Length: 160
Image (cartoon, rainbow, N blue to C red; front, side, top):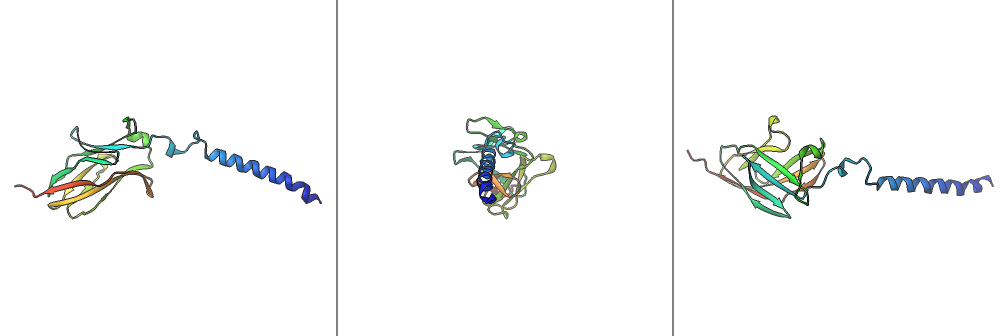
């Protein structure tokens, strides 16, 4: 008989604890690193002060162009939120990095030297031809929070 009198009390405590847990998980003020920055909406790739490629609203404007056997000047990725405000790399946190997938590494590859920083890189032309690259804002090593569509890379024969 003593069990039946404690059961309703245990049910109330369990229900209250579950409600608190769910409320804490949905709290926008919680310390979730993923919520501390604006999500990128667009990205620009800047080389020597000029924007050479832009990805916004699902559309790519521009392409990368270089010669076989050459390496581009430093290219920097700059992220922007939906309102066009720049999202600075330091605002993203240490768990974020720039990732990429190149369709055909026989024609071009990407190098990122330690001194370049985590948001800058060089494209290396390996052989004449065309390929594409998709850039990603990686959140840890397991997934991306933002990806571009395919961006063309044109590699021309080296002129002596």
